[in-house]
Length: 380
Image (cartoon, rainbow, N blue to C red; front, side, top):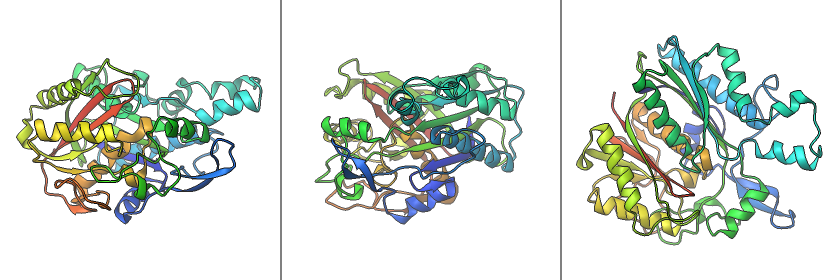
């Protein structure tokens, strides 16, 4: 399975080229946003998607972002020689869905809307609208696995293609939950930081890291076995669950190791073949400890390591979508879009945009609820 097309809407703006330029700039997509804090009278650093998109699709930023990222990916794939097969499936990776719209439904409209407007709240609606526009008649479903959702959606797409359930799959991952309410709770959990610019707070694999900055994104991929100019091959993937705690990572890291073993077995790749480690990289202590353990014990500290969360922020359910898009664009353009190092760091951590040397990349994602996933990417 290959990535045939990419579309992206992020805190940097609308379009994959906007994302790419933002990552190469070495500057965070975040800006100071009003209305945060316990009393909603403060500002916080958050990476929000700016308003835009097609108002004919939806009156919701969530719906417009999802649809525009998919449109861009489909147009990109078509320009690269993709011609859709008879059965095209659609997967949408989400966690909380259209958070702001649901909030307004209850607090502004008091649970009363026209039926047409109410239907836009349902997770099935964005998928249905996309299928209607393009005439896709294949299977469609939502995927939810916390911050591991985008990786899990890509792995599910590969399962569909391998099983002949679909000829091609449109895989979209959308998360726009960086609201004041959500940030408040993640700060209280000790995971998120909003009181300072993300590059100062989020320092994965570096000293002085305090956690992640919250962000929004919708990223789409066209996944196919038939395209003239693919970006990268998705070689395999693995999924496990810690079954340990709703927030904390199992300190044994056993299931993270098992996830990596399953991914590499599925991809027919040995640990020594892995050239790049695209980290989950939240900058939290437990995430850094887990990933360093995996890098040392399984990969013998060989791969070069990078993360883009200090730049694009932690986009929750869409995080791996942003990070896989960054990796795939890097394969094509010969650059690893790593975040710059700002403090004493792990010796294999890349410092800013770096020439890409080819080879295999593994993308690890760790989600709350013990959701672990790894996707293996490689040259076509």
